Image (tube, rainbow, N blue to C red):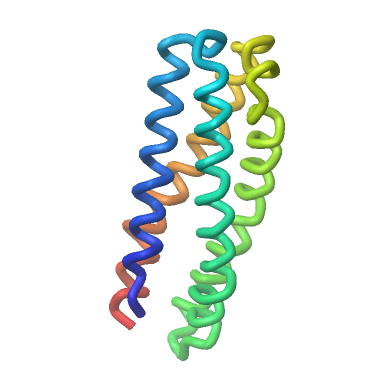
Length: 136
């Protein structure tokens, strides 16, 4: 199975997270509009990525005769549901420049938790799941 598109989307999302970190360090209130735009753009990529995984990747894994790989796919998919919900709430709350400017500390706290989970999850996919998928 060719997963180059998934890998590219991971790189795009990781770059988005890095850009948010740079903007945040430079001042949330000062960069509120740019942060909000970046969150909206990154959300589009994340939604597309999750939809494609749900329609293509996880069904292929579920049908795989290797039960350990099929179980791993289900586990990754189940775990992603929680992470996706947390990210959706984060994006909804912080895609507004005014909200960002009014609560810099709240944004930073949320970003540290939610974006770290997204980042760690993608790194686990890249190192643990995707190599097995590519071997199919």
